[in-house]
Amino acid sequence: AWPVQHGHLTVQDEVKLVTGALTEAFAVADKLYIQGASKKGSSDGSTAIMALVSDGFESEGEETFPGVKGGVTKVFCANVGDCRGILIRRTDTGWIPVRLSEDHKPTRKDEQQRVIAAGGHIGVDRGGCWRVVKPRGALHDLK
Image 1 (cartoon, rainbow, N blue to C red):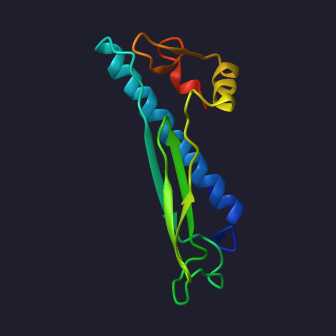
Image 2: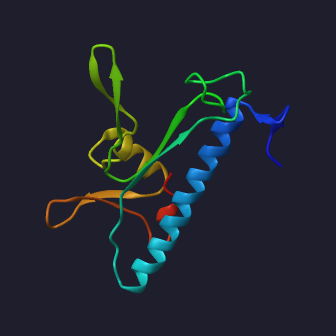
């Protein structure tokens, strides 16, 4: 059962619901990729990014744009690997970029700490490319 108050989700409930769904979708996709790659003897990884625009589930009295029913518009962004999401926002003075994600680059100190804390390893391969390594079949545990 969804946490509903008066027939509508709260903002916090919506964020929890969407965040959970995106986390689960990425974990399932990662698990399936690892299974397929291991059958082919590959240890390659992947990158992915997606954005979801939601008009919200708040009470009908709350709206981002006049006349658009459904609550406050939000953008949810999820990514894995070395990829980047940017939103271009129009302002009165022009267009400005807004970062939606943080690159999961193994060269970043905080990313190295996150990977190591999750039991992974970081190294440079023979070609000079940084790699994140975890025992086969366990990559989906890196969050």
